[in-house]
Length: 359
Image (cartoon, rainbow, N blue to C red; front, side, top):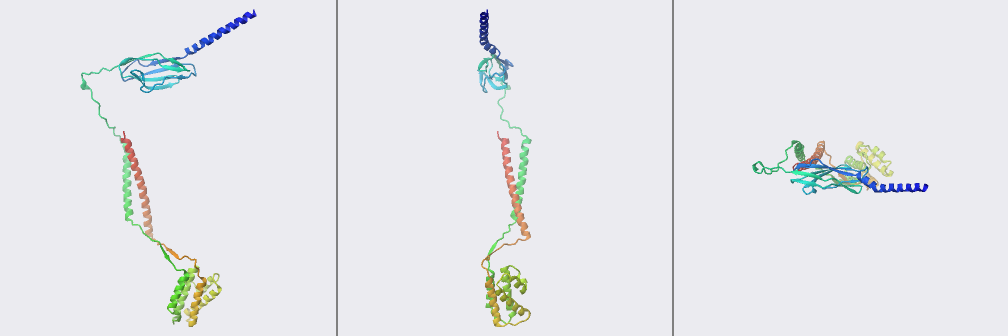
């Protein structure tokens, strides 16, 4: 009894497996369908109709709709204008035809999970348009190419930019005339050779000797020229205003800088000169020569050779000249800015005109 029950159970299981593997694919395929629907079976030549393909398939199925190129012939005389994918399972085809006829639209193949399913076939009737060929005068030939309408809103920006460009060019020309009339101020920087302080002093002493002032009866003039020469040398050599200082003040300034023996000799020279100029003191001939020698010794003992031998002389401009230079600089900058702005506007206007008139 137990053996029979086990045998019958195995038979039932075998039958169930047979039906499962035999009819399950058929049930799955029965769940997949493609519906083709046309919105109108009749149309005039040149009109358009839409064919909607709707696929019914299990959730998650991989659907591949047919792909048509623009103007591709679906069937001779009917061409595809546009293809739109509305969703994963809906596709819309836009069709047209220019020949009067009754067309057969073949089934549309759709691939679902690797299997091809086809829709039903459709029919499309294209109706011609009656033309009265007996009254040909009612028909007109092709018209000439018409110009685009003139829109002021498109041309206004370019017009006003052109006006602005002309104003800037006029302003730039006016500033150029101002710049041309405002003559530039030409100045020259001169570099002149200059004698060193000791060279200038020795040259003046040589002139005193050449004038034989040591033997002159006018001792005041002699000592005035000699001390002035020494003062100018000290002023240039040490950099303080010796011409405006007294003899004692000059000696005090030189105490910390010079040779004491030379300063003693210079002190004697200044004392003798002060006596001659202010106390009407009369000197001997050998005393005049000795003071001249002392002056030369002082110059030789304090001279320096490392001072610059060239002097740069820069001209000093008046306030009016300085204003003129500043005005010319401003005019040049303004003309440059206006020139750049005018060229930029010109390029933009030309580009805008080309965009408007280009086909």
